[in-house]
Image (cartoon, helix red, strand yellow):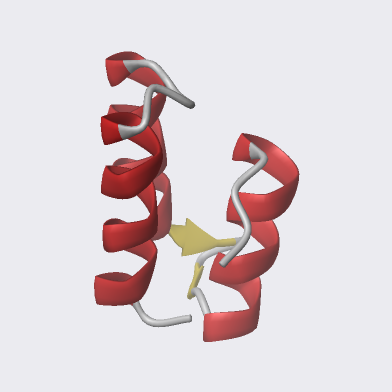
Length: 57
């Protein structure tokens, strides 16, 4: 999952009322972050959104 797709998933969850504005902000920051000092892969991003924020797409 690339950053654009992940961002759209977060926006859709926020607009649907599934997550708060603060959770959306944290998720947006998280998908752009690093994973143990290395840039996240698409699979890392997908797993992180599912496990940490309960969003799957």
